[in-house]
View (spheres, rainbow, N blue to C red):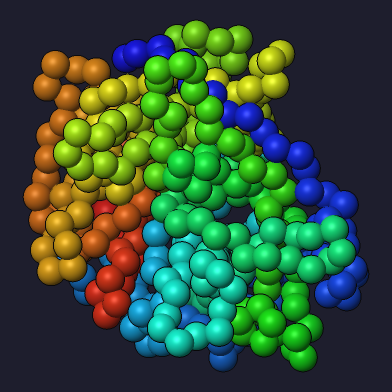
Length: 368
């Protein structure tokens, strides 16, 4: 474990611009709970199916158009179990999963520079119904711009949803800010019924000679203890796990940041959030990482045709930290989230896969 000079700097809260956007769309926030309650019986619904992967316990796939779509690519995953790690009460009733997607620019389409941006799918696991929420940056005049990030990982803690932005750090939204778009105006939101404006960015920074951390993926560590911190941040409470995708000579670090009970990064007197720990020995090609009961679990992918690998270790700093399990996941695994059970045997990992026609939401057995 190293202690490099790395930090996050929170940006200005976009509350006034968000208020203007809400007013432009009718003046009411539906919030995440309102979205889940409004999921129509005849709307989008996951289908239970089989998937490759030796660790796969149960798998679902998207409705046909989402399963085949060449524009939108699934990336991140988080759940109401993560959210409960930083909340006195459940942010929404029932069991809810969120999945992030980024949009590729399609040839010949009249879209904004960079394409349609990124979105979140909200899934009610009890009914398997889901809908998509476009992520946006609100403007002072009530308009908005698409949030142009890869969204390689997401972490939902309390009322905060954090969305990975790679070299830029990450963006944060409050789930209570979900707004329903009037039916007559959904063409301007690329057909989305819902939008979620981000409140602030957290910009990645580093000292002289230190490569800035790339926020390729995110997850929530709700374990009761954390490695000793070099800052004044408390060790107890939920932590944000971040990591870098890389192959070859680029860094592939894993880090943890302290979060407040409400789910926001803990900021020091200098106005910056600094990591509790940074590990240099991540796995090549990491797509996602979580900590469950003190053990690390990492996904790596091998293209659209070969099942993915689940790598497990007690600590990234151990002499021989990682134990790979080949063929553990479907092909193209991305981010990871953990759903803790009453006992270690009841714990489950969640991942999503990205390739068209081979897209699954998969519940995995936790390796021991």
